[in-house]
Image 1 (spheres, rainbow, N blue to C red):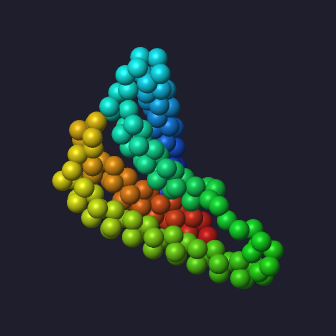
Image 2 (cartoon, rainbow, N blue to C red):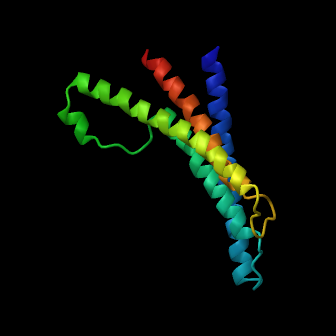
Amino acid sequence: MLNKIAEKINKALHNLCKLLLLIQVIVVSYVVYGRFILNKTPAWGEPTVLLLMVWYSLLSTAIAIRDDAHIRMNIIDMILPEKGLKFLEKFNYLIIFVFSIFMIIQGYKVSVLASMSVLPGLYIRTSWLFGAVPVAGVFMVIALLGKVRKMI
């Protein structure tokens, strides 16, 4: 039951990241076209790309955690014995979990603070930009729980 829910969440997250990247490419293409062909750059273009890039990069970290696609140093794998590697893996998950909780708590606080200002060109609250931090933290915790559940 939990595996099916986790798979649906992961598939939705994957599709959302694909959509964000596609929209980002379209907007950048339009900004370049407007700047060099029409000689008129849309004011909303660059803030939109920034917003999409932040959401895409932070949400994709949860996918990287789930798929073990993050950067790691393989030299340690050759030096440490099996027990040391198991301990290091558990310690790594603990550090990521603590950081994810930090992202949720502090990201929420920053989002609330940022709700007082507006993104130029888009005229939406800046909290939409900083809201990616706590949301990504939640998805990172979900990905970690799935990894730990498989370990047990």
